[in-house]
Length: 277
Length: 254
Image 1 (cartoon, rainbow over the protein chains, first blue to last red):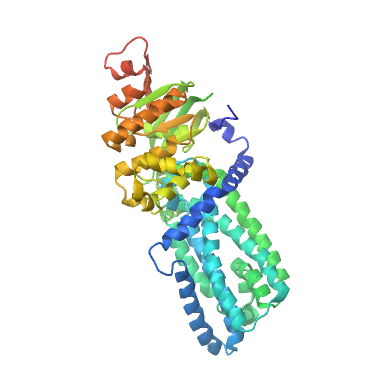
Image 2: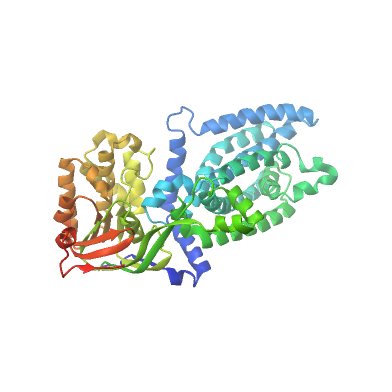
């Protein structure tokens, strides 16, 4: 027989190499790429299975929102529409990704109860599935960004490519959120309404609809907001205003801390998920 | 060679009531401290399995019997690697195919075909391997056009057909079945039993939890009786099933 599969759960050994085991478990989850890619794809497909526009509903509503906002707020802030509209469009597309990652991240495991209780697999695959499915939605929304950039004559040029590492950092944070919030959410069901409330409030204190410079002397409010940097590292390159070195450094630190926290939670709590569901 | 070995496996479920589960409750109790705090810490637990020692060898067909809530499903989930026990050791060698909560499927909104793909991926098949077997699996289910519909529209028996067909098609070494398999109709049960018998003939390990003595008698040779999470009897099936103890059955007094 060729290399039979082995299952070993030893309560005493578990405490010997907790970190290495957690990393190994998550790595095995990543290797099950076919599984979580398929699950994420089905998630998107099913969510819109009986609608005509499908996932483009998110895109349409976002486009309407951004168009209305762009015209009105440009007048409020006394800035030209073709300068404000690209700014707010990129910001809102990213913001909808961030809120989806936070909100769906807090239901990472509760939403996968049936699968977790039936089939053994590293539970981390459900965090990867959440991030992947929102990347698919982002790909739909990216159409708006493209249209607005062309319409407003913004040409980011080659610096626009610098948005890609920024997006990768944002997605890594999504993995961290899905693990941490998902684990807490599996134990305490208050997590979902809590996060939903928090994201609503965060939109108004994060420079998405307005610019960080508008804060004047209180710009520090934006500088200490990790979400600002996560948005800026994608937005600034796409607007052609150059590579934001400061924000990128801040985003690196935020990502490292976020993933470290997720590792702590994954190490200590992943095996309890099946008990909590 | 497949084998299963459990040494001193115990497992407790914390029971969280409506209020005990909220974050506020925890925060309030830890903030006030004292008696309320310590009350909140002493959680209600259900002892689902207690100190289970079992060794199952290659080719054995084992029945799990006991009342509802005796720990049969929990034990199956431990064998599948879903529940990690708090104490003790579980070693299972061989490719495991679990079949629990048959009525649920992997994803209620997904079609029958998609559920075949999902479960196949979980069981360790690649997409290509699944696509090459999908027709054979579809044939066995006899569900025809229903395979294109979301499985939430299936009856319990139809879902049983689907899940069973997938799990037995992956050539597992260790097959873990929960009682839901009885949801099939007579014609399906006949074919399911034939498939199980063929599996058993290949000398893998079968662990089957059921309340149907007939089904167990036709498939199993050995039985484990669970009571309140403890293993109370282990021996040949007919002896464990019979009310009169016999010398060859290990009666375990807890």
